[in-house]
Amino acid sequence: MRQCIFGAWNQTDVTKTLLQGLQHLEAEKGDFKEVGIATLMEGRIQSQNAPSLQDLQNQLQTQPLSGHFGIAYTCLKNPFEVEKYDATYLCANERVAIVYNGFIDNFPEIWKEWLELGYPFKNQTDGEIVLRLLNRYSERDGISPLKALTLTIARLQGDFSVIALFAEEDLLMVARQGCQLAIGVDEGVTYFSSDTQVLTQLSRRVIQLEEGKPTVLQSVKGRIVN
Image (cartoon, rainbow, N blue to C red; front, side):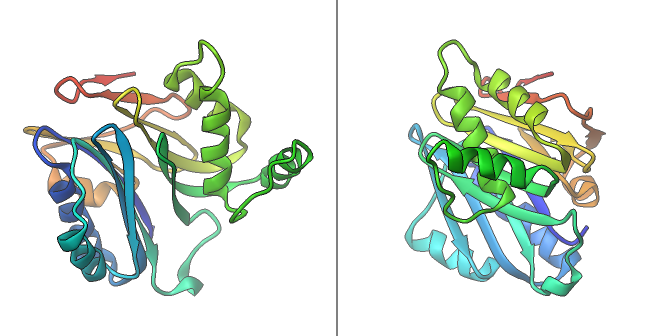
């Protein structure tokens, strides 16, 4: 896999952790045509995108991001090397942010459904589908973020992996279906990535996540709940 999604919790500052992971990915995969991160900062989702890792680092010098939870994504520089199941996105608003990798087979069906409801799409991407569904379910009374992600995964057909960051609940959740997604654990840091090779360089232990079952990383010392 030449593109990647990445998430982390750090008991100090997650931005440095995200950049470290992206540096490992760049060294392994080569230059990216686009890279971005989002963090949970002061109760709000904050995100930045750039055409290269160096540009992103320059932006963070003047517009720093911080927090304990963060997510990141990378896009391949050469688009002709991207496979069907290798589309990668970061989509965010102030409440929810997701990084997504994969391919949604029933995209046309869901897209038509949203148009009929009067909600046009901005970018018409798989990532926007995932973010809209998460928002839609999480806005219902009594629906927790975990339930919202579970309902979203059940609605989608295809092969994909998702890392979602929720501002109000101060947590990060991940899920996969058909695509690879693993967790890496080190002292004071927890990682999630679609690239297990990078996780082995960053972590003492790497575990492949169960398919179709969301995993929750809570803010209390990076506690993991399945």
